[in-house]
Amino acid sequence: MQALAALQSHPWAYPALEVVHIVGIALLLGNLVALEVRVFGGAAALPVPALARLSLTLALAGFALAAASGLLMFATHPVELLANRSFLLKMGLLALAGCNAAWFHGRGALARLDRLARLQMLASSLLWLAAIACGRWIAYE
Image (cartoon, rainbow, N blue to C red; front, side, top):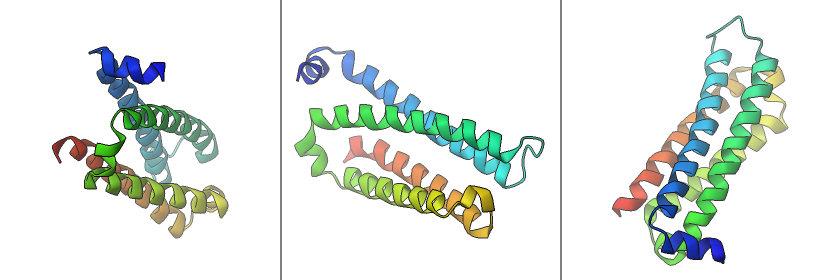
């Protein structure tokens, strides 16, 4: 509860939390896109397994930052956010991105890198980009 009180009483706290959220998003999406570029043929000198280990570790760290900061931001205005269509759409897109990631890793797609794996990677990036767009739109509804 002290964290929520600090977020609401210090004028710099919420913007600082937004910066943490953006850094988390950048780590997440940037590393997913880097791996996707490699899988689609770019930077062919980089071995996919090594890049995947690094990229996915950093993407997971980014997700953890974004999720933790997002939960704190949500806690400051839950009623308003639950009434916001952009927020609800963002949550739905995040759920779809999570399901896609679970399916991707559950079927061992990184070892296969077949057509479905490439489609899933592209879908992942598009879902995350759409979630980011909805996140920005929240303030304007």
